[in-house]
Length: 311
Image (cartoon, rainbow, N blue to C red; front, side, top):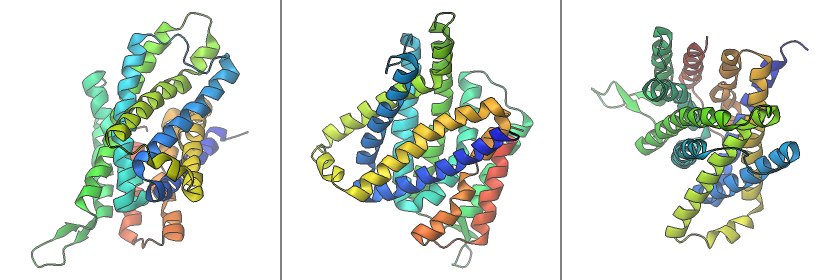
């Protein structure tokens, strides 16, 4: 079948869109802290079952101390800091703008990869950063109403900062995850091809475990454990929480890994980055959000900027 990798990549973009919409609904109904705890615990179960079916063990096999260290650090930066910012940004600026700020992830990944891994940044990568930032600026800035103010933010400053934090957390977490997976690959004995195939899933399991533990610690100190039995009774909130878990870290991760096996990573990455555009329609239909032409143009420009990182 022709273009199977491209088709899978588009399915991933739609899957991330469903995850973002479900996360916005769940965050508003059951709270961001509660959602993160439930989502990460469900992720551990889904990933554990997948690994058990393939390898006979629900836990990561052969991962050494260095792999655990870097993957745990990645889980803290990506899941705890990044997702905390992302889900809280949904409450203030909605999933539509929250996903727009996620186009900053390649920028953050490129810069952190340059610092931590010594990866070189081409002129095209710098151009991609500039174009992405320009697209975001077009979407979130308005002409100032007062005389003398040419531009002003049309979003809450806190929401914008949370969105930026989410994009940076995602990008830096990805680089730290890459470092952890490199150590993981080195620790696997020769001839264990099945284990090598499941390294991304096992790595995600370690990251999710770190995230779940950190959020449970936060919940303990904030004395919010009593809220879990309450939110578990919220059927719509739990349905949305399960939806964001399945469509995000479980199906999204699985299909994204599958996509790069059938097409070039750059093509797959660009198509999977279409979420800020795809999410415009459900944001209008489900959340009744007004969408301007400048916001649409800004979203397209941001995605074009992301594509420059991979072309």
